[in-house]
Amino acid sequence: MTENTENNKNNVNLEIERKFLIKQPCIGNLDVKRILDIVQTYLHEGENGSQRRVRRITENDTNIYMYTEKIFCTAVTRRELEYEISLAEYESLINDSGTESLFKRRICFEYKNQMFELDIYPFSEKFAILELELESPEQEIFFPDYIDVVKEVTGDKRYSNRVLGTLSTFPEEVG
Image 1 (cartoon, rainbow, N blue to C red):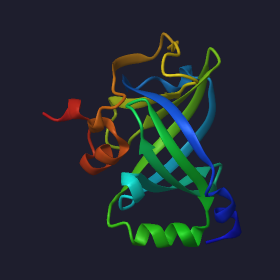
Image 2: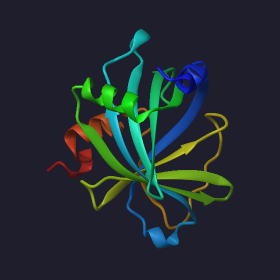
Image 3: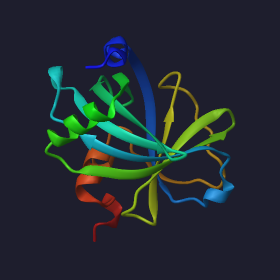
Image 4: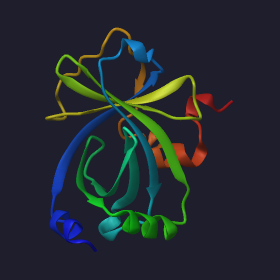
């Protein structure tokens, strides 16, 4: 492991997040701050049943590689350990993963001082997932008028990236 990896291994955060199934919006309406292309690969379960993954995140033709480990506390909260890894560590982990990778484009946009993350998947032209990290589970969310929320899917495992990546479809598109 690199020195950078060792220094970041103790950086555990509490993440509070809600997720929504939405109809794909017109990107031109969004106050876009960042566009990321993400390749996400799930690893074997970690200690204490933690969910482990690695990501290659491409922004402006630059790649970074991240390792993440999550322990779900409630549907909305989880403890998350996340840190940057080297390309060699990333390649080693995905070679041992035994799972397929999920591709998505993440569009980060701001609305009323809220930073939304819109995940668009190559397998759907109709739906997308909208995520928002919160200060508290009770925090009020303000959606732009041009976002058509189908339903909240926080805690619904059918909408987890792992399941969506495996099935390559949203449950609503299964006919």
